[in-house]
Image (tube, rainbow, N blue to C red):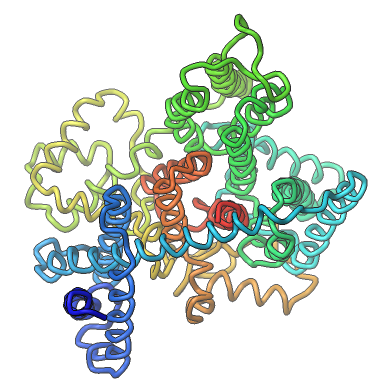
Length: 624
């Protein structure tokens, strides 16, 4: 090593020590520590973390390409958002609000962003090296082709294996998890009194099956169990198709086997497969839509030449929209993205291929076909919904769902800063939110307040209440920000303990330290377990802090933890310009954006994180 190289190495190591030291000093700001605790600062563990940071930063600085500004911007943006989420999340979890005047927060933000950016860039380089080696190895390997007969045989076994693994759990929690508005949806069918509060397709499907079986057998439990079996069949079919898709794309056999076992046995998958909530079928449809978008990006010409593939896109998108209303909003945002994406694939309108080649000029361009597919999807959705509303005489009760965030913002400000409300403001507020509703304000859950929202009053003079919301927001903007953050932070803060229903009494229990899953059978059903010990295991997972106590494994249950894993891969694929992977991930992120504007944070709203996990891993491995 000559003198010049020695000076460069010394300089880099000095920078690494400075960055690592600053990072460790700021690190307690992203740890959910008890007040005045010395668990990290007065521990030898912090020394080991410091030494590890010095080594990691030094190693990274020696090998990173400093001229790749695009990579730095993308990694820096990801690291900034992650650091912000961690800093905000710690305070929200500990004290219920972010103290924006805390100087420790604003000092820690740039320091930790810098540290994480360097580590992210190094890890991306590591992934790039793996990809290069894999591509070199793949060039010399010829993968065997599975006979078509064997493929069908494997698919049947796959479907049956998952279904049979879920059956003992169904018996254990018999008749299934009839929860999350299940009673309300069943009552609409039983009483023939419909509203648009829940998607009518799901209301008819759930209530129709339960009522029909009850009429034949005089058993509501059997009706609920029959619905669960129908849903198990749908979900198992979707998972089987996903595993077939992975096999066709030559994803490693080991990855497919682990994915199969994951689908069959992982508790979150099993719980929601046996849950009556509309989120399950919505997520299964969203998963199929992601596969369709991947096919579109992989070979656009072949996609638009295949009626089957185009029909699959239409049906999966339509089903997703029909089973959750936020699916409509998310796919509407995707419309310009898809049009621009198709335009990019075909460079402004190349002609669709017939069988891999290009058709002669004069045929419809693929961009026009994409526009037609989107028109069919939205036209079909509005037609089906309109027909159902008219046929069922369904009442429209939507305002409080759309206005969840504003309702929480007004309620929080009224509770903690009532002095900003003038007498006229209080009068206007009580017209849409009575006093008895406002005292029920729960920072993590909008249901107690929004259920009392006066829709008729709001509809009579919307501008009056919009102006009220704006006026109070200008007076207390930080209160508004904290109201929204408290309602959503479980979706982006990995260490969140999901206890939004804490203290709420339902049919057979009272929520205490965890509301991870709604372990319940609402009336008219009742729990009749055939395997009590297995029933107790799922009750513990649902209602107790158990899995959260296991390091690393707990992140598999964390919506916030999985979200940042997806965001990391999204940013990496964006950096590598692999847009055929970016677009499906973008669909997931847009769905995520719709739920952080929702009533609370629960795993069921982001179920795609778990249903899609094998696909996310496969997409990453396929590109490495």
